[in-house]
Amino acid sequence: MNEQNKKSSIVTQMNVEQLRSQAAQSTKRYQDGNIMGVLDGVPILVKDDIPTAGYMVTRGTSFLADSVENDIFPIVKLKQ
Image 1 (cartoon, rainbow, N blue to C red):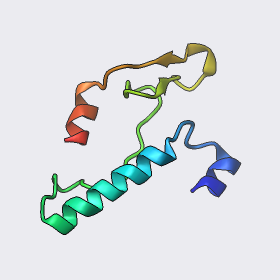
Image 2 (image 1 turned 90 degrees about the vertical axis):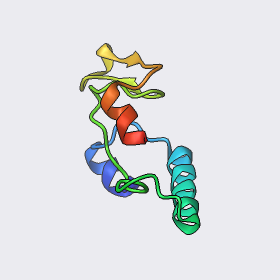
Image 3 (image 1 turned 180 degrees about the horizontal axis):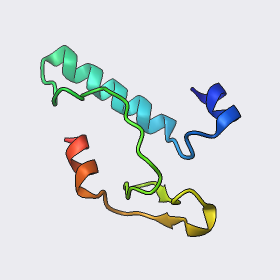
């Protein structure tokens, strides 16, 4: 994904360590039979105009960039 993204800049922000940690946690839940739901372990891209904790909301341009501390409701539900 990184090589493709370098050419097209589709993904503007990505926390690789967080992704790996979440993948490991999901794998452990599957092994233990404690699956969170049907989307457990499925990577999801979120558009940069949707407030997601820990990521900048850029709305497609750097001069509108804002830091976000809390997820909005749909993101909270996706993480459950």
